[in-house]
Image 1 (cartoon, rainbow, N blue to C red):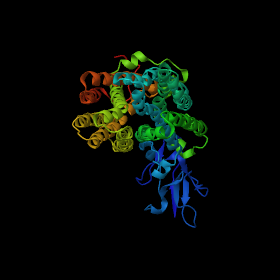
Image 2 (cartoon, rainbow, N blue to C red):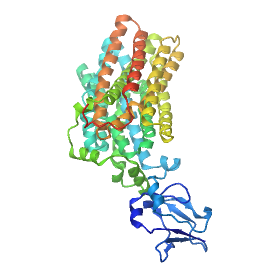
Image 3 (tube, one colour):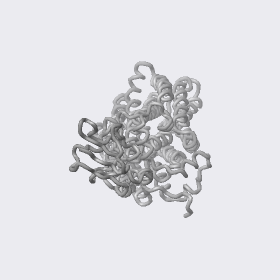
Image 4 (cartoon, rainbow, N blue to C red):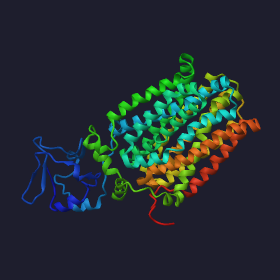
Amino acid sequence: MCYSLSLQSSIDFRNRSSIRIHGDRPILTSNLKFPASAKRDRRGRLLLCRGRGVVDSLRYYRHTAVDLCGLPRHRSRVDCSDARRTPAVTEQPNFSEFITSERVKVVAMLALALALCNADRVVMSVAIVPLSLSRGWSKSFSGIVQSSFLWGYLISPIAGGTLVDRYGGKVIMAWGVALWSLATFLTPWAADTSLWALLAARAMVGVAEGVALPCMNNMVARWFPPTERSRAVGIAMAGFQLGNVVGLMLSPILMSQGGIYGPFVIFGLSGFLWMLVWLSATSSTPDRHPQITKFELEYIMQKQQTSTRETKRITLGVLPPFRRLLSKMPTWAVIVGNAMHSWGFFVLLSWMPIYFNSVYHVNLKQAAWFSALPWSMMAFTGYIAGFWSDLLIRRGTSITLTRKIMQSIGFIGPGIALIGLTTAKRPLIASAWLSLAVGLKSFSHLGFLINLQEIAPEYSGVLHGMCLTAGTLAAIVGTVGAGFFVELLGSFQGFILLTAILYLLSALFYNIYSTGERVDFDATG
């Protein structure tokens, strides 16, 4: 039994990307494996003979592309017209291939880095309670001490994002982790030296951590095709939220064993260990990775939608067009989304241990645990949101509508849940409302956060830096303002209601002005 594959127009096949056999799925011709036994006849046709154990199938890398045994006729002609009508398609990897791929290892390392990032950040939210008691700080002054991290965080995102776009995420992330781990490790010495030294150490943590999310966005954009980026961001941000859980739950335990400064030493040393693994096991781009398979590399590169114009801009190191970036409303949509996200994130992260301690009169360990539970929920729902977002896009939902759905759930949901939090009479009920608010908040990562890569892929790092700067300003106002608000009005509930209203208004703004399409920042208007 023989099957013939007509190659009469070889030029057409070099220019066309795929073929079909009897209406079967497309096969990428550049990766089609022909058996050594295949021969050409006098008319130039490729004959694939089955019988006497010669060949049973055409193979596409490790996968059977066409089972010849299942074809209904003895001879199948596949010509250039088939190739001409068929769009370029790559084989989708199955779950086992995806989970063991090099790109998943990269995003897992990013998740660990973001976990350390938040653990180093949140440890002060727990330590501030005994520090305030021992040094007689008021709630407003405690808010200023906690905001010292944000003053540093305000400085670096734009510069860090620009460096990430130019030099790649690997090197910049390594420097960031090294600096914030050193600053965290030295915090006990700084606190015993003077208040100004403590504020400077926390500000240095903020400066270094300002590059973490731009690095994550850059690495995800380079390592993952568009149909997998939501899942990748979900995995990375799950690590980000688990860092809150680890910091809030382990800090009281480490304090009870090693004193108030124990967590700072442990988390600081962990960062240096992470950096050693990161530098030896990752690369900024897939094509530079020594262990990536040919199948995975070609799958990533063929799915990428980065244009030559983008690459040229990054290579030449052209100064980012800040004015043109700010002239487009989709830019303001992601900036407002990030600002509101940071306001809610830092207010809840910084003040919830104090909230549970002062409103429900639970001890420090219980307050930290009640505050940690919501972030566990956020880590879980973040991956679910990422999977659902990718599924919507693969099934034909537009990227713009998908981002608006995710953002609406991520902002309207927390707004309603925070209103419910103000009515809670018991700490368990309050933690449940807070878990719902924080869990739904993770959906916004698949709205404004991943939207940065879509509207400005060539400027995603610097645009993320601009968004983080705006978010940091909002977080400073929220974190410091909460302390003064409580002192003046004597109630946390009023500030929580204000935060809920801001969530709802931000969701409305994003839905009006956002888009999932690439924005032409070279055009005026």
